[in-house]
Image (tube, rainbow, N blue to C red; front, side, top):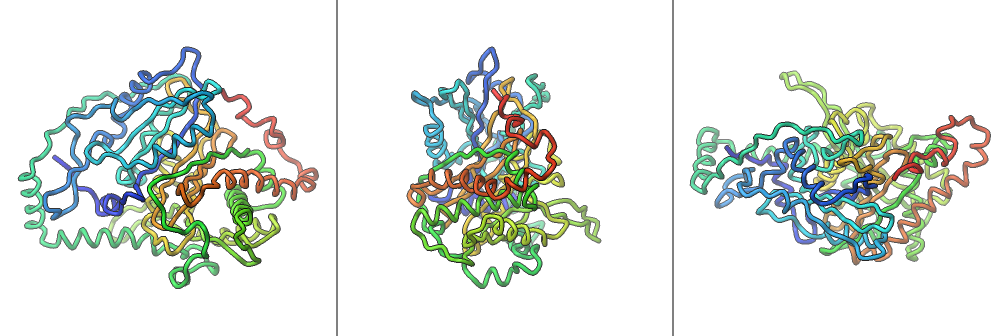
Length: 489
């Protein structure tokens, strides 16, 4: 039997427009094994892992006349080769060409007549590596128990783990008469069903909105955030249908150096790096930046939910908070201190998306967690913030897809109306990988922002090098020579 979409999941279908497709994803770069890697091998791997993600073989079926929410139905004509596609870069296969391909693929909406996901094997990278681009609709990722396809294709070793037994047979799709009959039965047996659907949507959205600012005591409040608009900036303009994408690599070793010398957490340092980059980018554009100026970022959080007195179990849900990035501050160390001060007031039950408290899912959690963060960002009014930043700590060990070692992974976080830039961050195997996703017309200079990120980290390192010489740093953190990425691929 078909299953009804939740009000929250359905909202991502309803809010989708030609300029704001509601899918997230990313691009990962792999070093192939000695016996090579091809499209057929990837198709076999994904077909083997599909039982872990049953929703990926279902499509959305609207109910006639829209009298209730759509349902999920098995795709009787499911074809894995339609979803797992093949592409190649023209010589020389540069990172710039890959970024352009990612932008074009992610700009296109998904076909609603089929399961809402796609995957691309991209061959022809200049160094002999290949890339895999994934995109999944936000409606697929329906909570912390959900899993993204990019998560289940990875293994902790070169040996490909056997998938579960697969006895899937598509259930017959219901007819329009059956859908209407079921809908009327629901309304007849539960007269308040229509009101329930509305109430579910309001509650889901209000859970996200209620947490905005509420977890930063003395710094932000929901009422204050609602009362004032975000700082005017080139980031908040009407957006079009086309996108740009830029990938940035930073060293986790360098970020740890800054943390040891100047204090704060790794997350604080990363936000300080982003703040410094945004400041330099604004100045490069000739945008006036004055002392005290801030940009407001929406950061997804994991919120611990206590068990209720009515017997409902507790757990975790992803919510949001707003953090002001002090782009008007010229001193990089002071910027870091100001960010650390804000985040230090977060409630102890809150954790940034990806913290250990919510990585209870087997496999590589970041793709799913970035998608959950994007869902939260879409439910919070874009009038409250300038950009979304998701930061997900990943495993500090190599992962593999059918024997191919993943050497980098960059998230793609979708844009919403009036939001021209999103930033996704993953730490993995000694590196920090940042995906900049932007409106094509609003950020023609996205490459400048990418360079500013590297320069911003270097600016922090310059401030703390003298202090680092007086600190005892454990050997595996003391030198970039120990960076595990040096041995990748």
